[in-house]
Every structure is written in C-alpha cells, then in structure tokens.
Length: 259
Image (tube, rainbow, N blue to C red):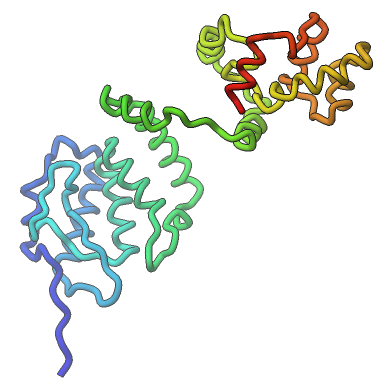
C-alpha cells in the first residue's frame, strides 16, 4: 500500500489573501498571475522530493507564519514565485528578497544566480543598487560597523589589488576633498593613501639615492628594485627636497611603531 503525499499547507483557497495589503500592489497584471500561481499550488498534493516553504504574502510585508499563508513549492517554483512577486509588488523588500533568491545556493539548482538571463540581471542589479543606496544605517549600526573595523588594516597585497582595480577610475570630488582634509598636517608616510611597506624602506632607498642624485623618479624606482608608483614618486621628491630619513625623528618614531 503506497502512502499518499501530504497536502500543501494553506489549502483554504484564497484564505491567505486576507493578509494582503492591496496598497502595496504596483502591477495588477502580475498580481493576478501571482494569485493564480499560488492558488494552483495550494490546491495540489505537495510535490515529492526537495521542497521549500513559501509565504504567500511575505513576512516582510506583514504576512504571518500561519498554515493558510504557507505553500510548499519546488526550488524552481520558489524562484518563479519571487520573480512574479517582485514584479507585482515592486518595493525595496521584494527587490532584496528576489536578489537573495537569485544569489542563494539551492540543493537542486545549485547557484540560482546562473538561472538569470542578462536582461533580468541588469534590471535586478540596478534596482538592488538603488535600494541599497537608500538604506540608511542607524546610529547603532554605524557604531557596530566602526567597532568591527577598529584596529584592522588591509594587507599590502590587498592594498595593491585595490589600487590596480581603481586604475583609470577617477575619484569623486567629495572623496578627494575628504582625503585631503583627513591627511592635512600628516607626514606623507602616515596618510590614508601611503604604501607603508615602501616608506619603511626609505632609509635603504636613500643610500641608493646618495650614489646618483641625478636619477629621475622612474630610474630611481628601477634602481632600488621597485615598481614606479605614486609612493615611489613621493619618496623621490622628498629626497630631492633634502629629506634624510635617518635624521627625521617623526619618520623614525613611525618606523619604530610599525616594527
């Protein structure tokens, strides 16, 4: 005797609709499609195999965890449900929910990210970016983020990769002004933009510089075995101005703090 698969929660056809806030519906056409999609699956036997529970009216919009608001879907159906819902109720919460659905791994589909076509990705990514830009952190969240970063610095390898990724990308004017303000009055080796690993070797570089003061910045960088960068150009300029690392107390104290 074979057992009958359990029926999907929420067989009270349309019962979940009483939780709906109609003011949030932005596309009646897609909303009708969503109602039919959910109703069809609430009236059937639950599928066999891997399944996921879906809130017919999302919890993030006020939907409860009650049985009449739950429907059992396959992984693919769950993805489609969020896709239609995103179109029917276009708001920040549904955009984030669908983005998470696209990126989340699935035991059946693997990475759902692969199931998006290029147009869907472009539209969704743009909407996700807009939503994220509008989300403002609370003072408490800002404090937690600040504390989590306290005392942490990027490794030189990470700094290098960040620098390479930003090649050719101009910084916004407000970012440049903020960096200048934060670096004002600070030694060049102790700014937000300095490459500390190279400044730490300034004393060794100076010995090479003494041997041939006619070297330009690029030839000087090559002579000390370093790639020509803004940091090397700044070190070269300091040498030309008469800077001697071993006689600079600020640099010596800074170097000691790094050891």
